[in-house]
Length: 457
Image (cartoon, rainbow, N blue to C red):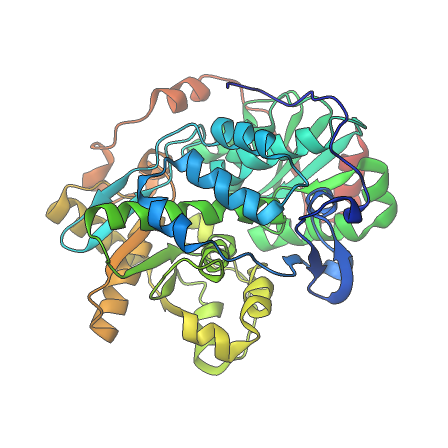
């Protein structure tokens, strides 16, 4: 069933969480006694006091589910996992429609040598893994908002790919405005094109600062209660729980595909990590029963999580600009969720390894991937590939390693090794976007200026 956005009759919904026989109850990480339904958490985005919404309990998928998982399509698998998580806040037939529509693109596994695979997550409209979260979230919001049709204003800070996915996922959605903040000079040419060319209900703000500055402005806007209520503010960053749910799905799918090829294989994942939403979503999947040997949080020079695993002290730092710009985050928001999920440092360090890589190491990995395997990569995936190598060298693990390919290399041509740039085939969709006029508004790192921009129609 091909759908754009939901216009169902007002049925099967009630604002009282007691109405649902099964529902996803969430709590505020900074005020644990504060509870929320999934619908409320989706629209509020950030919990009170800058807290994050976390599931009070994650369901464990059945043995029968894992037995059949290798034979399920992506959307079939997604329907089962999402239904288990959300309960009956969204009817099963609607979940089926949302999953079929949101995840309508391929998710291939590409082999690079023995026991190593790249999970290609860049075959959606914006050519980045953020399409999973943005498309799912836009359809969920449209469903929940179908009765009241309240005006909504989505705020999102991006270090590159989130903005493009959100812009495309929410473009021309009735009743929803989108404002995207991105750091000046720190996104690629094609990333900026995706942010600024759509217009309509999507507005792009070029901020003279870092991603952390953009993220801080968004969080401050949510804490301005008058502004938030007047504008109906909500978030499309990975601070929104509706982003993490769909990102957990491809871990299940990858595991199932590996079992198809190598029955009984142990599997580990190496995840290029910036704001830590992606690897946190993987941890959700593990808590739901997915057998994972280890999660590797592979990072660039922004290594606050790598250092944390050594001594248990989390020390945010100003972000450092690197070739892998989507990972240039010095204060990852989802770290708070990871600590909550595992009860602190001792639990975290048993589940994660983290390795930090320089730009020089990243470029060398891109050349190695091409010369040995004919794989054209980009900086983020190359760091994921390096993470697998480092873990295997440290532990001697013989598990099947899956690293995440988070974006199409065409989005990063200017920062690829020079000898590889001409080898990248640019998708037609990007070439078409490049022809469109770019519309953006420049601003300083100033909340009052940002506040006035939000209030403009």
